[in-house]
Image 1 (cartoon, rainbow, N blue to C red):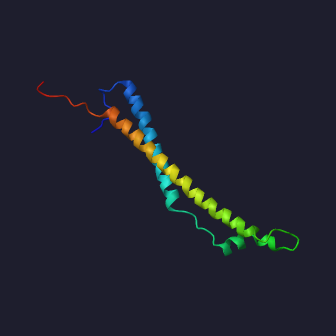
Image 2: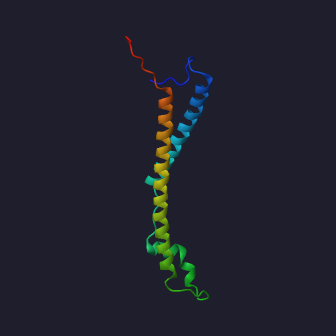
Image 3: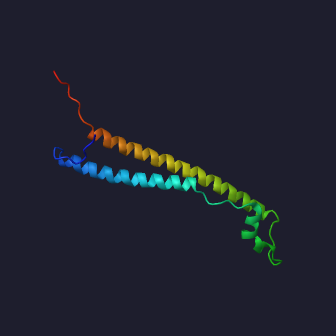
Length: 119
C-alpha cells in the first residue's frame, strides 16, 4: 500500500507526489476522452448523402465544374476520416503510455522498502 502524504515523508516527496497525482488524474481524463472519441465516431455520409449535402450548388447552370469533382471530393472526405481514426489511435496510445509512466513513477517513489529481518 502506498501512502503518498505521510508524516514520515520529506517535503520534497510530498510536493512530488502532489504533482504526480494531479498529472495522473489529468492523464486518466485525457485517456478516457481519447477512448470515447475513438469508440463513438460521427456517422459517415454515403455518397448520395454527401452529394446532396455538399455538391448540390454545383448543379446550378452558372457554375462550370469538372463532373467528377464531387466524387473526388467524397474520396478525400473518406480519406480524411481514415486519417482521423489513425491519429486518434496514436493519441490513445500516447495517453496510455503517459498513464503508465506517471503511475509507475508514483509506485516506485512510494513503494515500501522491504528490510531483511534477522540480519
